[in-house]
Length: 331
Image (cartoon, rainbow, N blue to C red; front, side, top):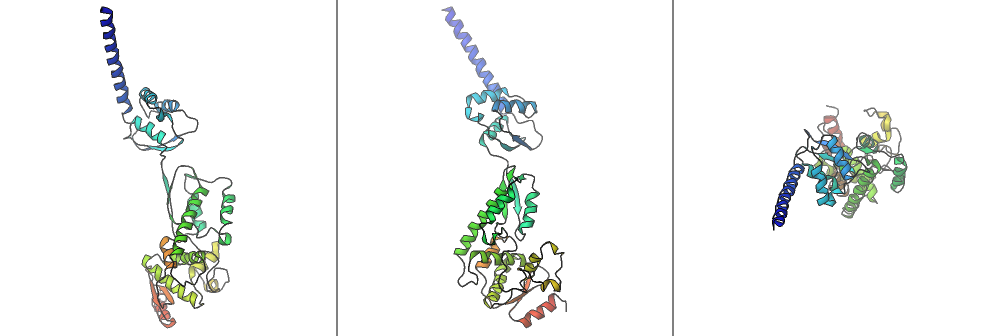
């Protein structure tokens, strides 16, 4: 009988001790990380959960790893850590850390690709981002993509937006995302276009949208400018828009358009050619695309910059010349 009592006594003591130990280590795993500020942390390929916990302790990010290793026994799913780049916050606990690594919710980076810029300018922005990488076959993959596009040009065919991605994302993957977004939006806009537009394809509409984008940054002017260009196209008038001339000049453009530039023939000089240039001249926004496919119905054929970002619109050449004298020649 005494033996039974002693066994019960030791069982109770052991049980209390076991529970106390679990409580102690459970408290440990809920303690905040040893961090003073948000920290970017990379989980590399080939690391085991236990090895990662040892590394975190060595780096002074967690004070104890025994409780976490016990937690791994109780919750095996937490051991399924995922390779990636994560953001660690001082408010996080050690357990939060394990849950984050096993969730695969990597830190998201972003890049804003702005409307009105051309492909060459976009490429410089993409190259400047430290978390975007360029594989050796980037230009080869780009060539495969553009070979499927009208005029084999990527110009205009990427949708301006803010794109989110994880660390070390391939540049070509970002380009493909922007292309698919543009393709989807362009197709929808083409399906809801106005009747009797003077362009035969969505691509021609995209080209006009890029010109509209470059002509004004005033949102509510875009449909009106579109209306002017549509009127001119319907009358077989030259568009005579400076941004196309600038695009055709390429890197030789030094900030000024001279009279000789307006008279120099290029496929993009709309002072010399009739109709639209062969490709877009920039990446147009959704608003510019909407304007190109749903122009304002108007009799206007001309507009001139007023110097404040807005434009003066005219129906007749006489009215336009007066506006040019007023706003451009200051007479």
